[in-house]
Amino acid sequence: MPVARILLQCCTSASLKVHNADIEEVSIAKGLIAYVSFLKTCSKEDIPKIVDTICNIRMLSGSERLCSLIELPGDLLIVPHFCLAGKLKQNAFQYHSAATKESSEMLYNSLVATCESFLLSFPSWSESCKLRYGTFAIRQDLSVESHGPFFHVVDV
Image 1 (cartoon, rainbow, N blue to C red):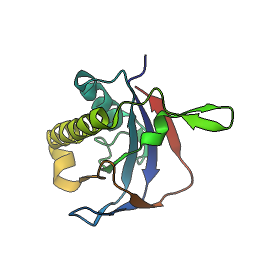
Image 2: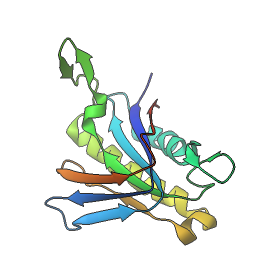
Image 3: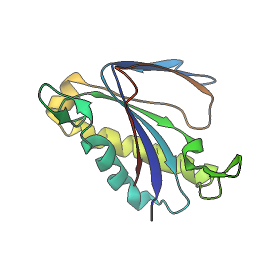
Image 4: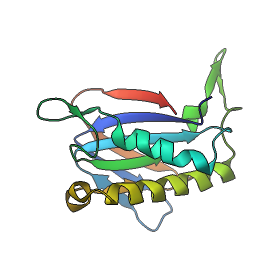
């Protein structure tokens, strides 16, 4: 049973403007954007598996083949995205399978911290790349540049 839904998008650059936060804008260069939504079944024990999926999935264009974030290496932008947990019923979305706001915020903070710790353990990544992330439950404006639409939805 899935515990989270992630929309992964390759980008050449991205910036996220955060309203009502201490940091007004974060940005990344070539890398990956991970839009994350947690389901009711998700617990803190599931976070390492989610991090492994985000960091090791091969979908970034390398010189000869698709590479992971670590192999390329590339930047990572994590964006909380509650709506990914929605299911279409007739002409409206329902969010019965989504984790509560409190649980989602705790899981999101844990995801960011675990992701940062994991990525920094790779010297080739930590020397040249950065991890940036959005703020939970605050309106954000996202600007993305990419070479065509290249998205994948992953249920973890």
